[in-house]
Image (tube, rainbow, N blue to C red; front, side, top):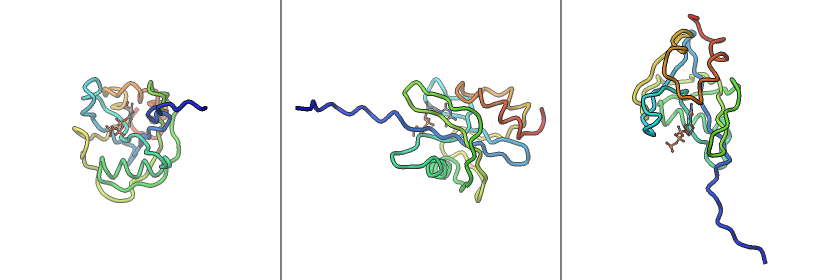
Amino acid sequence: MPVERARPADHTGEVVAAAIIVDGRLLLAQRTRPPELAGQWELPGGKAEAGETADDALRRELREELGVEVSGGDRIGEDVPLPDGRVLRAYRVELVSGTPVALDHAELRWVDGRELGEIDLVGNDRGWVPDLRLHLKGW
Ligand code: 523
């Protein structure tokens, strides 16, 4: 008889992160949680929900976090494996409508290539800096 096991939480999904670049500047958002990441800056995004594509997740997360509509979704940079088994991926997206507002972050900032190298980015996002800079001015 098969043994019924408790299903572990689904930690096999994707965490999406958005590179929104306008006029050579990248939008960064300052995290408020968890305490070890609070104050650090990230590409906004979050966990894809069950059944969502990366595109769906980007559109939902950016609507929730920034109040904007986006489209697109070319990959940028390498996959980042997270300790819980998920994979973090960055996508270049275009603003379709709205002006980003910090609905879930402490603050937003548009940075050029030089500022991207100086700001306190979350560790997971740091590897993307060289790829991001190719699209930014001022470095
Ligand atoms: N990261 C990360 N960089 C980055 C994002 C969007 C997320 O390192 N640019 C990490 C931080 C967390 C995990 O990915 O360890 C999930 O991101 P989070 O907390 O932003 O996802 P949410 O918003 O779906 O999570 P809840 O706070 O639970 O709603």
